[in-house]
Length: 338
Ligand code: P6P
Image 1: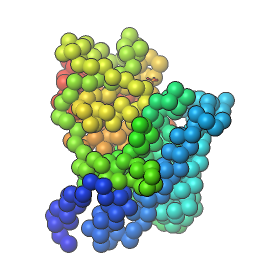
Image 2: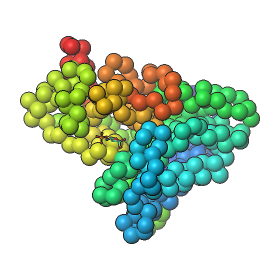
Image 3: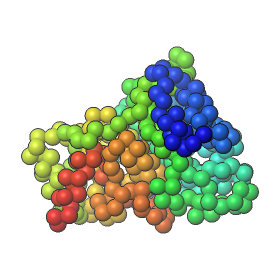
Image 4: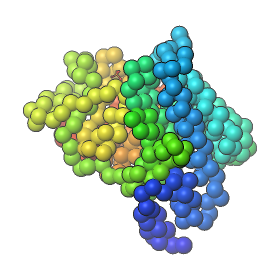
């Protein structure tokens, strides 16, 4: 099949309500060379998310709330559900056999699963976990790359320190009033809502697009007097002058998802407390940057696109500005003036 026809087919809209499984199968048939490993990987992620969703839904009832009295490598207090989610996703991916290795926000180093899998996964198993105890939406964020080392050889950090534009897929699961899985494989963005009675994700948001502009800005304004880049404070002042709405949940996936649907911009700048930014490049920024660019938006660290950043450490952080194209351009103008 010629690539153009292949691309065309990949854009054939599937009906709302089609299950994730059928959707994945339909996309796989458009890539005859695909032997199904990638499709299986996506299914493994979806399965793990269903198990995590169940744990989250009963979090208020079973003694798995609160923190376990230890911190992850980024210094965040680990919540019981963080650890549970990490176990669930790691187990699902290692049993699936398609993933050669995983690097997680919850573990210091990468995990070599010692199999012949073609792929590696970078994952934040449960982002925004500080919101768990107050029943606010939280999320899982994942990036999928092809391994760089030869199948059967030991993995090295090089397999994981790939630029965001090497991702072959990225997505998130939002555990909110409804649970959604949103992902891209480089041919647009599609959203699936979890139908709990069926235990299936069904297509609910086909071909998602980020509005070119919006009137929502999301930033922790407690940082304002500590922001290093004056252009960012100038942009926030511009948002206020334009009577934009400030909306900040403190859970990246939830803030990102709202801005994706309604138009808006999320800002986590470098500041005195986080001179290199707070958010993780491998586990948070890369995946959302891939998704937003596929949906027509932009993502940068204030000087270059997120997807062009060459990571040097697994737990590297970055400033993150992400959202509607025109709002990102206005922000960049403010930054460039300073
Ligand atoms: P702050 C949650 O801990 C997180 O990693 C993101 O989900 C969220 O956007 C950000 O940190 C919130 O950080 O400093 O505003 O509490």
